[in-house]
Length: 150
Image (cartoon, rainbow, N blue to C red; front, side, top):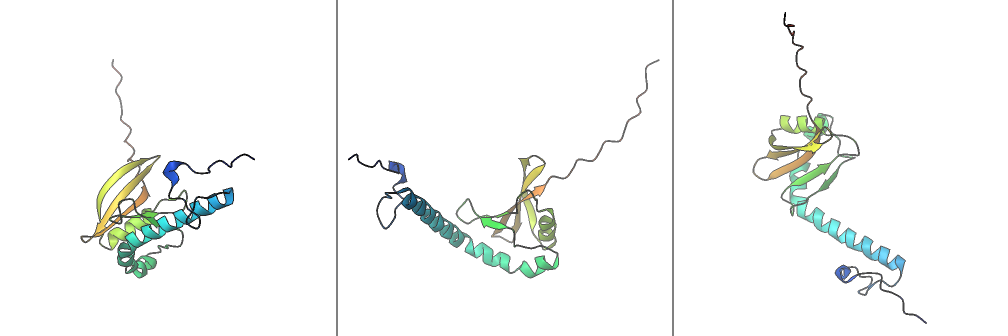
């Protein structure tokens, strides 16, 4: 009888099922899901203070027609910045306008490609949000009357 090959590599030692290495593909899938779950919980814990600050603004944003039902919240820097992702293929120009009206200031705007920009907004000293917006279109240049040389 041949020995069953390992399903994980050395760098995947964090994938455990009941404290041991997964032996079947189902156990491997469960180990990955468990690891992702715990990572997401840690991420939510890291941004919980920012979410609580933003939660205070929900009634004012709802009055401006903003819904949070289709958005996801993440962080990439240990909770210092709250990244708000909209649903697929939409941009948050309305959210941007509503946040600015509530006192947020735009700190940075980076080209995100394909007519999009990632905007960093800040309220007070500690609430920093990043959202995607559609880039403003450049105004059309007025047609110039060229004179043909005589």
